[in-house]
Length: 350
Image 1 (cartoon, rainbow, N blue to C red):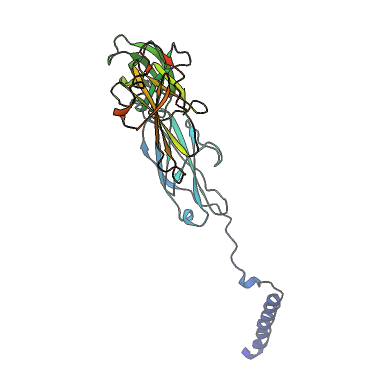
Image 2 (cartoon, rainbow, N blue to C red):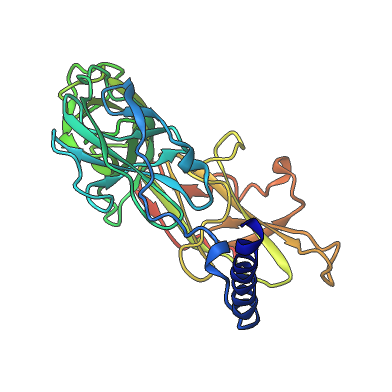
């Protein structure tokens, strides 16, 4: 009996082998050895979603990730919404940077406010997991804003009868911060003048009654109503100015020098301040000044030894040897700013 059934079985096996061979020769893969198809299943979601940090303007969360996150092209997407309603999809709400792949931090946020995080796993094929959500709130803001920079100076305005102080300030606070600004002639608020009651970060200006050192006090208040102590900076306001012209030359560098009665550098800058073609303007306090210029040959010029020094006199520029002690007497204190707010025509174009 066994031998009687053996021949049909052999024929069936041979027929299956021939069919598989025919499919292979035709460039097809026999169904009996077909490769597994790619999965169409969405990746699993994150788990163990927790709030890892809460501050007045910052929230952070963490989670555990499935193994799918570590496959090529996979990622975690976090979206934030204000209130208790989570983002409906990975493209709504506000994107939160992810510290791949287990945490995210959102800032700056409003203090004492509720926020909801929505978290998805995205695989390399662009499929998203089920949404994970967690709702929490920021803490109350009790930290006073801090002044990070404050500086400026005062100069004679376009109208020589006015001295304008221009200053700026910045803060580290992430909320909207406003400053109450008071100008005082002393290091005390007593007797000060209110300059601004709610000035934002940036530049502010003030017109002062006379030159000298003025003290500007700032008290910062953020959107939560938290205020800093009074902070102050001394700013110098210079109420006089000297203007003139110098010679420009492609073969020489030009250095302007303004000296006070003691022979020391004076003014808002001891270097050349261009105020137009070959022009300069220097702000000063009241006094008498000597104005000089030095021409130094640029490297590789044809005049390596020809350094020239000139000082201004009412009769014109005079040359000297560059030693302060040897400045010609007619040039010393020749610019008189004790009464006049501005002296022009101090020309050193030789």
